[in-house]
Length: 553
Image 1 (spheres, helix red, strand yellow):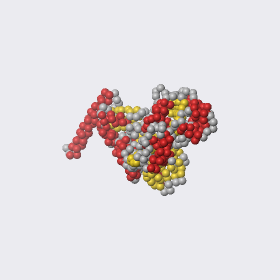
Image 2 (cartoon, helix red, strand yellow; image 1 turned 45 degrees about the vertical axis):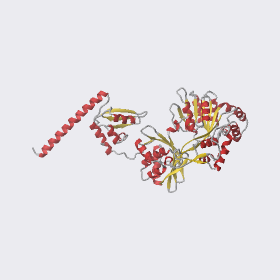
Image 3 (tube, helix red, strand yellow; image 1 turned 45 degrees about the horizontal axis):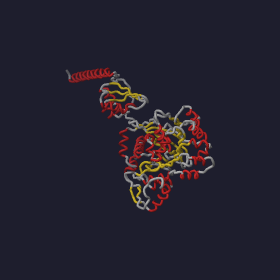
Image 4 (cartoon, one colour; image 1 turned 135 degrees about the horizontal axis):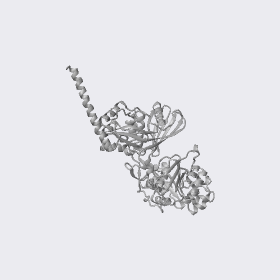
């Protein structure tokens, strides 16, 4: 027999042996599938969804002995060799999330090898998925480990793709706890800034062409129109495998040199806080808890934009929320989703305003109503009347201090005879930055600073306990360290003033009044002002004198 014939015979024999091995393998795994009451497939002729395949990377697929074959918004089909394998189970568990159905099928190791080979031929292009950006949890952790400060972030934002840049920006924002990412086009470049604890910091400068690509990427993710260059608002999510998704609210505005973008980071952990997390003094905290136990009346939180009013309202809701209480909200927009309550968003195009929405909500028989903001006469009238008819109403109002809420409501033509019985509690607040616990510096107070502190706090010295205001007093000043990105501060809490309606205030409301008159009465009745509350926090080592002067002047 010729050598070529011998080789052909050997190849035929080898193929037959392989076919026998494959058949035995298929019989083995088919039997396993029958025993587990699961479907079996050798995956021959089964179409492989490239997007589904890349739900997990190749290394994870191989180490877990599985492959994702099919993907929709509500379903994943996953092929495995052994569903009892711990590594397989761990990966399947990581893919689970609410509303997503996982269907498991059994296949053979040889079939999985054929599927895994598709990774090489189906490298994912930079596709722009509408509505969400997925950042691998391990990748996000790696980026967060590498980005300790804004300086580290600046070094990362060089020669990267648009998709990678957004991943880096999100990792940096989450690491530094930024509340907003700002893109601001200028004549020849675009400036990128983070807002950290209420203050804007420069991060990088990028050229216009690159910025326009980023702008388009953001528009697509947010379901906005690429060809519209006027004001637009949208939203998208950063999805992580641990299901701790972070929403971003997008605002786009035309400017002289292009479209400016602000990405507001809506971290869900922000609204999971308790009353104790707000920074309330114990006497105020106990007072508020007592008022929230009353199941009728209105609780108002006042302050300018960015003062933390929404966070405070949500903390109240979390405190009240229980299986025995029905809570309905009307908001503009819904920034955070809270489990266990029904939330609705105003829609002027459908005539669903705060006022009209309140009328509808009243027919739903709620116990507690949260109104995002009282901004007009009709909303004020309906909300306060609702609080007189067996409902607890929580809302916000724009006023510079607690005393200003009363004249503001009168300006909205709320009748004084309704105001007094309807108002349970009025709170005003500002956010102040907390000193970094790792680098704050304790120093003896200077004579000039001591004079300022005495002027603010001596009027309440008989009612509130605080350290002796002598020349030996020591207070904390900001330092610098990597922990706080060399800013000296990390995180914020509120400075508050609180009052409820007294008989004297009720008399005052029966005639025309000015804010200063209301404030004088409240102070004479024992209200500690926001400024005084801030200075008490200074003596506790929570904040600094320069921060109080920045916030309060």
